[in-house]
Length: 75
Figure 1 (tube, rainbow, N blue to C red):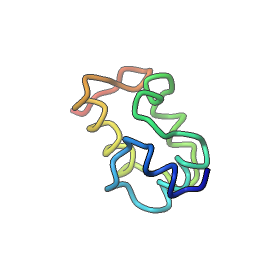
Figure 2 (figure 1 turned 30 degrees about the vertical axis):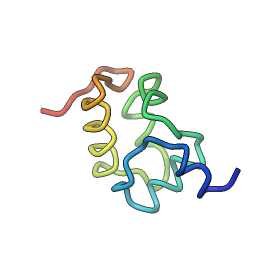
Figure 3 (figure 1 turned 60 degrees about the vertical axis):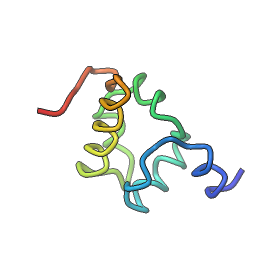
């Protein structure tokens, strides 16, 4: 499965920048639900994922009634 296939099967917001998208794809993150099993700090460790991408993911999780494993929400 290539990156295009990954994006077609993913529900991660497309507004995330290309470096973060590649980092998430490379780490196997395709679905928002996967982030409920990891902390924000773990995702930030991925090279290419910064505060902006993390905020986009956090807001998408909240929209679905979900949170990161550590229960973080926007202020």
